[in-house]
Amino acid sequence: MAVFRIERFTSLPPADAWRRVTDWERHGAMVPLTSVLVPPGGRTEVGTVFVARTGMGPLTFDDPMEVVRWTPPEAGRAGFCRLEKRGRTVRGWASIEVLPTRAGSHVVWVEDIRLFLPGRWMDPLLVAAGRRMFGRVLDALLEAPERAPR
Image (cartoon, rainbow, N blue to C red; front, side, top):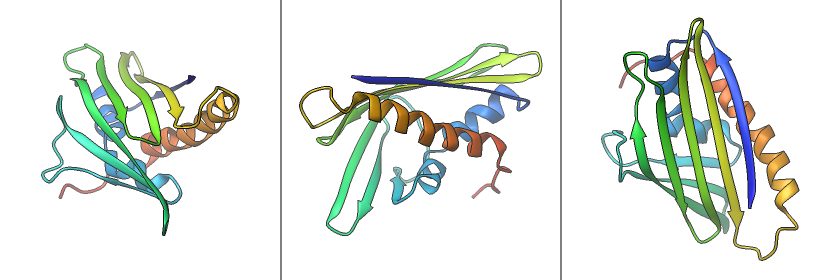
């Protein structure tokens, strides 16, 4: 089990921070060799399944994720999302929490990644790579200008 935690503070109001960090398609655009396939309509709720596809050519794997908890922030209440990874290659879970602060929002991303490989010998590498890669994704999502509505 390789668990890591990333925290960021932003001046964005909680609703805006939430909208950005749960824009699944943009996650894929920020991870090399990855795209995220979301259901038509783009609405997220409990039961929504989306797939992160990573790789190139025959060296590609899918990371399907199901939303098992979905509580957007509202009226001073924190937002919380939990995803369960359902793939053959990548298992585990991720949670994203957006907490209101006086100056904006506090975003907390916690992830447990388990690969199909037996043993825990890769856990330290997965934790280091996860913190670095997802930290960059979170930074970019919170800093980038919001794209125009579709």
